Length: 463
Image 1 (tube, rainbow, N blue to C red):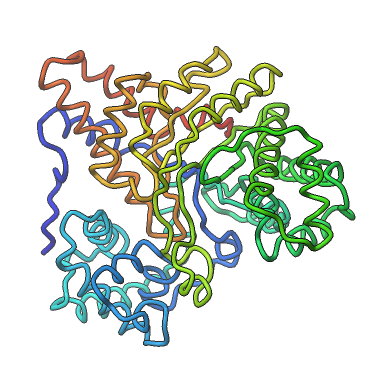
Image 2 (image 1 turned 90 degrees about the horizontal axis):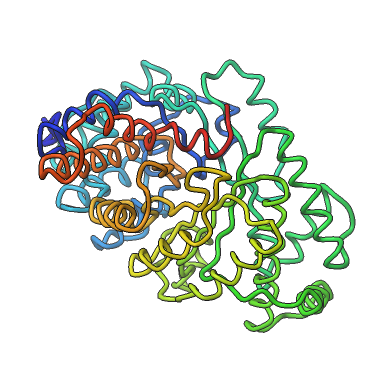
């Protein structure tokens, strides 16, 4: 049997009551993830446990590399079963890592399997779950609906095909799938394939030769995204860059379109301008902006060439761009174009700096117009979530917080929401027990319900 008990992470009676009576029942709104929308549309039954559990999940790959597993058993040519057995061997002693908890919960929730995950039990778990998958014809739809998910915001580049979302909307699913607008591929001007990405944008718009053309194309594409329900956009940068004069960005863009490479300084000029342009566009269109900062990407050149992007070789950056973030927000605010913004910070050293900054730009446009996003990526673990809640409550208003997301490519990631909810309920339960907040369980419970679901629904304007 699994080591997990009913009161997992809940340390007192108030925490248990908050979770059982308020958090547990709430639906899930996954407002930032990387689930493949085409797979949701096709809705084909999964073939085995590896396909659902390990394929494409670089969280798990990274843990296996830490344990010294050969790449053959991670992304190589080993069989699905061999890779699964290697993961179970890894997980058996990964104490304190969130995957140690998440994987155990995923087994119980999705496959009714409460066998403890370790090397000894791996064969039994493999057979059990594959039999369950076969008997129940497990599909993306069944996994999402089993998790009580009402809305999913996938992350889509500006040139992505939107017909998939129209077709999903015609399905008899109990949830909605909506694309979030992401301009990273047209922002990262230093990328080797940059002009190829612009060509993809041209394929769905028109010929792009000047910066004005690019701006017009992005505006047109955002309008198309909004027709299929888009209410949020995503920007991801290692740090926020200064906003230059438009003419400087124009020169860099023309140079790159001619096929010439650009310097680091030139790429930062362009990214600084395009970040401002996109956020001003979102402010104009009343689209919420999810601004991700602090990821230092593609550290391992050998593995980047071998496996490509998003395979587990990114890390936390120590770049401090608080002053340029301030100037960006201030410029947008001066022009009446500062959108509702969720700042996702990957470096916990910057929690208080960012919290105090966004507090300078709040307004009655929305409760918590400027949001400090949930503990993200390397921080979506017990330690990271607890620190996030402490810093959020110390300098902000917790009752306005928009809560958790998965940021995942895995259809099994939804227990992460309940992992967060348990930590949230335990945090508030301890404050109640210590006499630091009201003892009115209904008042605290309502805050838990709002953070779990209601706040994000209202903030992002979905129905």
